[in-house]
Length: 115
Length: 111
Image 1 (cartoon, rainbow over the protein chains, first blue to last red):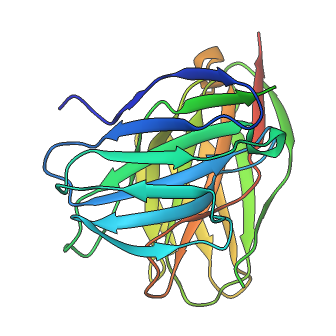
Image 2 (cartoon, one colour):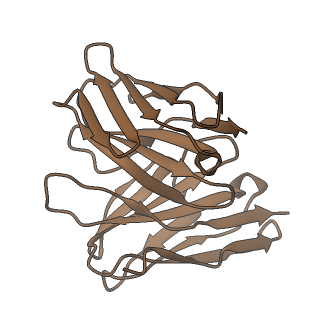
């Protein structure tokens, strides 16, 4: 079990640039989640996928954010025209759906700093 | 909507028990979780409890759930310096898939 992996671990960008993050879930997990965590706060839900279908999006996910999971395995989260308020830790989690108990396992996160 | 609250800080001496508290508002919560986050790292799942249970024990961890008061606690027995971290309480409400997290409790273990 290699766990959830995320790349890059850190990203520094200038305001207005586009950035893309990647998440590789645990291999047999069909559900994948993106959360955002700002300093001193708990993670906040952004969106989730079941296989390749994006089933729910939070109001936090503005038009500048887009997420994909084209083959139901890895996922990407893109932020266009970044703003300083986008600076945060972006966390990915995966789970195996279908059972009674669903536990989400988190990756190490991608820390984004927008200058 | 859902709201999960935790106290921000807790300090204990090494070897003592730690009790971290959490309150939630959504009465349809099905599962409640405790996660641990060390500096610069992601979240590590510690344990969870189903809403029809009132207690769950897992080695040094004991979770107590008071559904009437919507109060959840995590007790860590024989707290060690390696337990120093931020602890998050999270709920999964009703048929929702996503978790709603509290702001976290910073646990500091003093030698």
